[in-house]
Amino acid sequence: MVRFFSNQRKVFCKSNLQTDQKKKPFEMKTTTSRRPLYVKYGELHFEIDGINCQLNVYQNVEFSKNRVTKTVCFSLLPT
Image 1: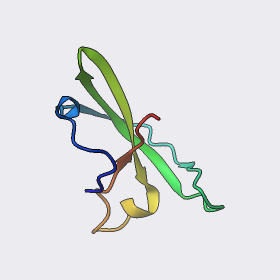
Image 2: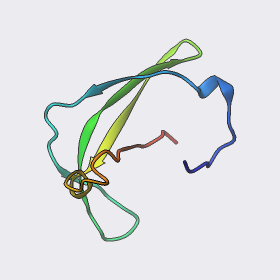
Image 3: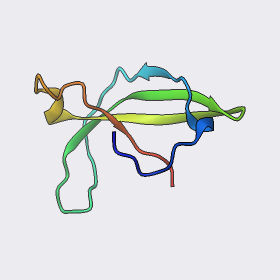
């Protein structure tokens, strides 16, 4: 686990994952000229301080073809 922020107890929560059945590949912008293919794997739904929240979960198309990395997914946190 990469830790960019200090642990804050209020942001530890349980979430429900709703998988996306469409999984249409798209090119993800990066900080370089590289544009890897990703699919929207699903959405995480949870609540923090009484506020309903949602985060999209993405999966790299090439990683999904590899036995070792096929379960690797990530989510982008709002800034």
